[in-house]
Length: 423
Image (cartoon, rainbow, N blue to C red):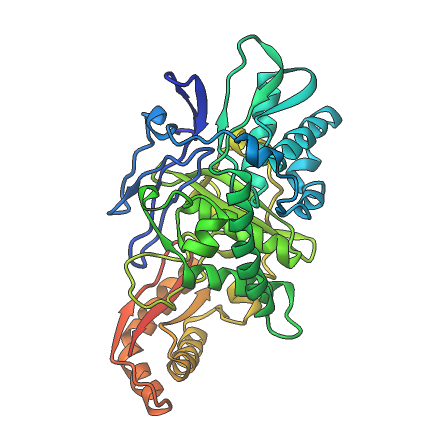
């Protein structure tokens, strides 16, 4: 299994965490996106293959060291309120007291755009690398942070350089746009929304307003700025945008780095709902190749480890920098929570008709349900496909929006039966 590796850029003597991803095309089972403590990643147009960049030095020429003007500007406001959230993060809780002190020093230095971090004592590169990677992937608000690690000349060092994608003043202007958009999204939550309702609103907003892109199309494709402002991101950008909005909504979360089943680098999230952890992957729930801007699915909304780990998603514990919690609960799964879960073919026929009619009335591009097992899925899928035209006719009879075409978007891996609808 190829790991998300730290690549040595010889010309600049820096290490870069880099991921590349294959993005899901149309509505078939998907794969990756982009996650790199740098901004080097490639998209495969077919979704079948994508290679990790081996020439990382070519991506480093745009490294921006903080200039004296921005370092002196102490009045620039960034999202410092998130610094308190940092101390409640799951990853942070796994660190030793010495590692937490290093984490705090690096975080403070990055918030203040310092050109180096002073640890106050000699530390090993191994410790620095572990903590730095954790900050890069878990502190999703740090959109100006470059994912570059400078190897120590000796086995230990008291300081390490830091790199940024922009200066402090520019970051502050970008932050204003991010804050405004985040506030707009949070304000859109329905009155009395549960944690799952809020998470669904975040998930669907990202799916409807973001598109998977080649990193060359956008220098912010692995950041929340790409997700919230530019709308062009790769998997790291999807996962960071999800994590950032969950932070804003008060939903505990973390970002997982690893690979998909095609051995392409990937990133996704875990969220904590009512004391239980779940996996959620908005990259794979936003498949490319569909022209409807409202097309978003829910195959990977709050799923268990048993459904994805070492099947479609493979964790890289070294790059994630800690062992994630277990996800075994099912209550907050999209299909179970919203009563779209069936245990027989007869239930599937009845519920799919109901959902197709409901979707037609709202002009939604999908009608989807989930089956309880492979056996139920096989029987229910056959039954639904055989009755699909009849269901279409009944839905059209009850709706002013007329379904003109159907397409089978079902997924035998997740037991989701989905009919894509065209009007």
